[in-house]
Each structure stands twice: as C-alpha cells, then as structure tokens.
Image 1 (tube, rainbow, N blue to C red):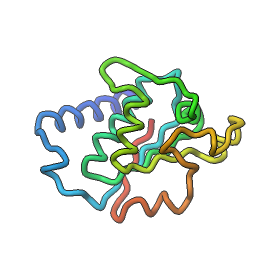
Image 2: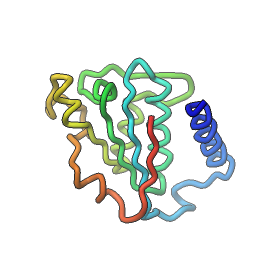
Image 3: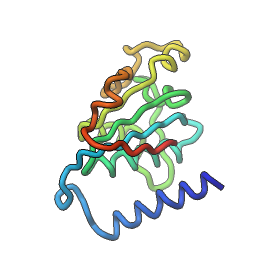
Image 4: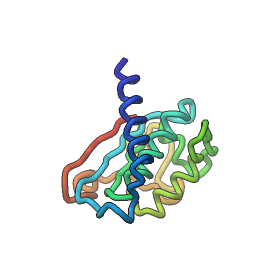
Length: 147
C-alpha cells in the first residue's frame, strides 16, 4: 500500500509538471536539493528508470545527488547492460543526461567492495561516495526520494 501511495504521488507530480509546462527557463535554480537513493538493480527496471527520470526532472531546477547502493551497484558499472522499460528513456541515456546536467552520481563504497568491484569498474560520471558530499551538494533543504 505504501508503494502504491508513493507511486501515485510521483505520477501526480510528473503530471502536474507536464501540464504546467514549467521547465528550466521559467523556474530559477533553487538552493534546495534532491537526494535520490536507488537500491534496486536490473531486475527492477521500472523502479530504476523511474528514479532516474525523477532525477532528470528535478535537475532542471534543483541540485541532484543520486546514491546507488545494494543491487543498484550493478547498473552503474562500465560493463552494465542498458535497461529499458515502457516509455522511460533508457538507463544509459538518463545517466548521460544527469552527468551533462551536473548531477552528482555516487556509488556506495561498501556495496562496491561487496560486489567485488573497485572505483575503476564504475561507468563514466559515477564516483565513489564521499560522506561530505551528502551535505555539500546543495545549500538549502534536502528532499529525499527512495527507490
């Protein structure tokens, strides 16, 4: 039920966003930031791509940090396969867009180690998480979305 309510809320936000037509040109860059925690991997393409789509949308007018841990480590490796699902842009398309927009994309160092991988195994634009960056990627409040 909690997942259903969260999905409805996210869909309502996306619908409102698309109906109002507010984009980067009409809304000033905010000091408040958006922290997106993604722990799902390739077995959950809907969750992965929805989380990244939210990150892309939010990055239009807010600083964004996407934190990949647990199963999400597998999708941010150099050799990860591209994911697709429904109408969402693909995994690699969205990661490239987020990198282009200056979003911070970080992988959990403990989860990376547990997967037997190192920083050298990460895809371009993804870096190992730094504790200080969690608080310094934005100057205002931090909204967290968890997928």
